[in-house]
Amino acid sequence: MKIKCPHCGFEGDSSEFMYLYEATLYLVDSMVEREERVRPVLVICPKCKQGFFLENPYERFYQASGLSSSSGK
Ligand SMILES: [Zn+2]
Image 1 (cartoon, rainbow, N blue to C red):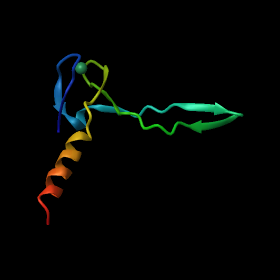
Image 2 (image 1 turned 135 degrees about the horizontal axis):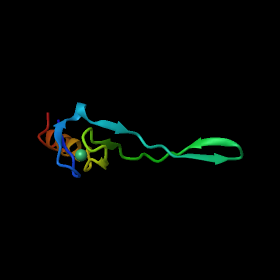
Image 3 (image 1 turned 45 degrees about the vertical axis):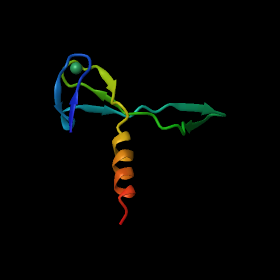
Image 4 (image 1 turned 135 degrees about the vertical axis):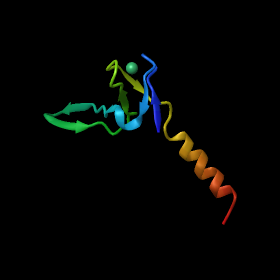
């Protein structure tokens, strides 16, 4: 899978990029609670070190499953 950086135009394999899973912690009554919401993965460019989000990485899976299921068994 090829990924292209929108900031500097660097294009490389997905393994060349770094990924940052952002998580927000809430402090409630001295107890840390994890946020339940799922956040998109931030991709860090190895060249310019800037972060960006991939455009809906799950959409193609939905499309692929929809096509395969419509054809029947
Ligand atoms: Zn870049």
